[in-house]
Length: 380
Image (cartoon, rainbow, N blue to C red; front, side, top):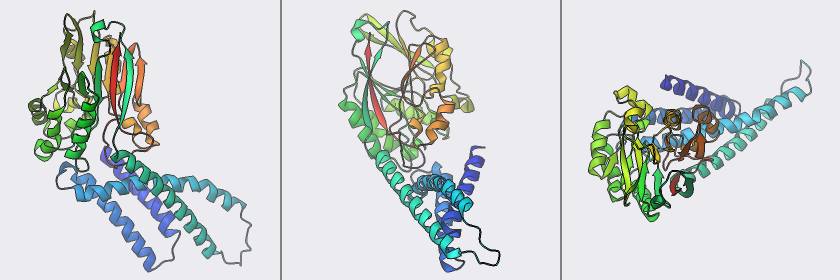
């Protein structure tokens, strides 16, 4: 269903762009054929990139032009749509010509070209800024979080939260190395990687993930699956690989974090997509044995999972998944599906922190949603 919707949307967007930037701006002939062919080639590259995404090692040469065109196409469509009311007003206010007088086709083409150039310039500008943001270093956010039952021994405890790294055809080992370096510079007590680490198999992306072994923190690095971990036929192999890298995977389970006699519980649940791999999230198992007298912090990839967490009196849930919307105006669609787009909020008594993620998926473009690494400082 996702592929059907995506394919239909791409077809409609491509036709609309062709009609407004090619059909309406050129006479029939060679120029129109060349521009039409160029548009079809770009769309074919995008389709090829989507189809070959299961082979990150060999699809980078397709992914870069294909996904860049995807981002540009989105903003080209939006810019052209903004001009539609102007076209409508001009049409309604245009003086009627006598029936025998020929329409001024050249003037129409000139106006159509002007609109296409303006829309193209706006789309290129927005996409360019979005690419620079997506490929640039993540913002390091420092957020205090108050947990009423937190023992004084944990006051000032720092949790580095990173999500949605999305290693794949566009992001590789250098991306991981930068994230590891930035996380280590914050000197965290604990690192939480809340899903969507990879878009490929261990054989394809194992070397890209290897720098995770260099993460340094007093109490270790913990990981929960995201939906993308279940999009590859290699979930179990990845969990084994992470364990060998020193990253502890919480699969519907919990562990105690201690400071002398004081402690809190750190739990993790599988992503909702785990249902397809017969590894669904199990909150009862994840929270079994936790101490009701001390705080419980839950790692769960999708913010929507906070509803189950709140029913079980979890103090704080750490999530990702949303990318902060990644590309405006998709923020609004994400907000319809998730209780929070980004940042700290409270849902039915449970605090929820949502990272915008350190990578991207699909177009290497972020507009209105810069990547981030967050350091949460716990306060009692």
